[in-house]
View 1: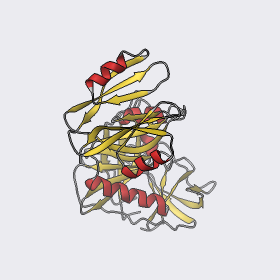
View 2 (view 1 turned 180 degrees about the vertical axis):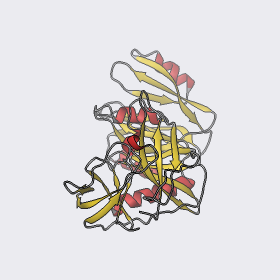
View 3 (view 1 turned 90 degrees about the vertical axis):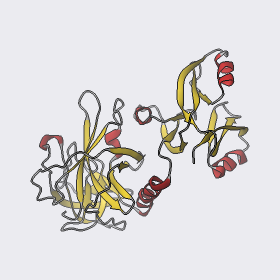
View 4 (view 1 turned 135 degrees about the vertical axis):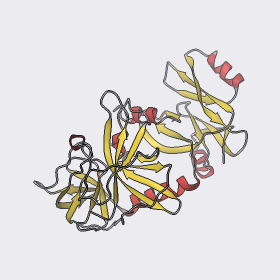
Length: 325
């Protein structure tokens, strides 16, 4: 495994923190790290992420590290357990080849478990695709904490065929999730830099937030919350007020101070401050109210807007605010 740049990913959380491994990939437009999403899954984790480049000549590493690179958690898919980190400094690195048609056989992997500090592990063994996973053979590769996000590759400099996501298996690189990673990179080159994440709760309630800490706390609360993706981006000088109904758990967002005051005069509603800032122009974000439960959806994508209205289950309440271009 000498044709890739392996890095250590550290996420600040209390009391012990968490860490994993990733592989750095570079294009002419920037550098990113592919890793496992669950290393960000501590309910009390912050977005204080540190990426430390290791000796790229893995597995013959001498444990030499380079200065940390400032990262941004850009995208994550908790279903596939994949995450993409944007690196704010571009550099020429050893980008691995990705293979999506692996049918099984010998693989190699390694990472930086907390027990070994900056010294990477190295293991080989058999692996077999099972649905969307790559299962390690019994009595073969055994993953320990800190190796999550490590590349699973064909030995002797072969391409990466999966990402370690569990002690006994990894996420198999498929056409779908490689395409998703590439789409994330494409979005990062011109997409929203201040994403507003959209989650849906067990009763169909919508929740929108700019904070990854809130995203991961809900996703990992075992109460049925699912991350749907990025709804739109924030940015501008217009505050979007966030309110919560303590009776039914609904949240409500509005850029109108008058509307906020009117809602707060309704029993059960409380202010949670400013959710994010919106722009005075740009991409229109429409607000829809559900005819089924009264909850609100905030939609910037015109196709999604049309699809939701076509169900007959929503009323369009018009443009609520604008997302910057």
